[in-house]
Image 1 (cartoon, rainbow, N blue to C red):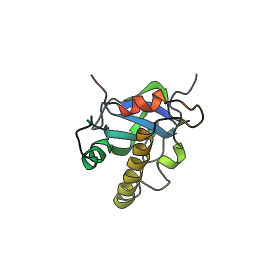
Image 2: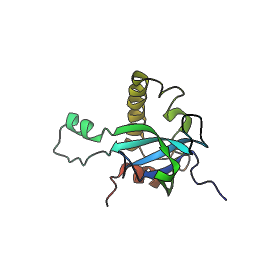
Image 3: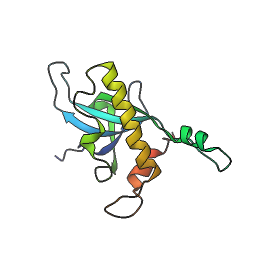
Image 4: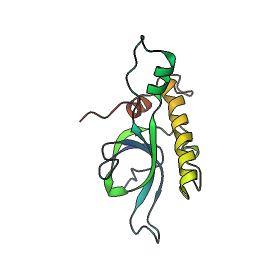
Amino acid sequence: MVKLLKPGRVVMVLNGRMAGKKGVVVSTSEGTKERHFCYCLIAGIERAPLHVTKRMCATKVEKRMRPKTFIRYVNVRHLMPTRYTVSNDFDIKALVPEGALDNSAARKKARKDLAGIFYEKFMNPVNEKAGKVSKDVLFLRKKLRF
């Protein structure tokens, strides 16, 4: 059977605090001593960029375009994979560095760095290899309507 939850796959969280949010799989694991279940490390968007208009000033546009992110270990059964992958658009290993979830200060810094990476890609969604706008990044950017 083909493994769907590979790094770079865009997923939706189904259960828990982040239910209904989109994220990118950074890594997967079959289980450890602390977690006796299969899980994935997810880098996701807690709040999508908001709508902006021409009348808004530059600072307001900047504030509304900045996404709020989260980094979390999630049980595989609580994820729904989508058809989108962003492995060509992002450096998956650079999204969440090793040891980023050890303490609260490192986690906060990792979330801030992740927000910067997502912001850069959302402002310029063109894929360097293909030269076209990536539909995968556009899907990740939009708010999930349900």
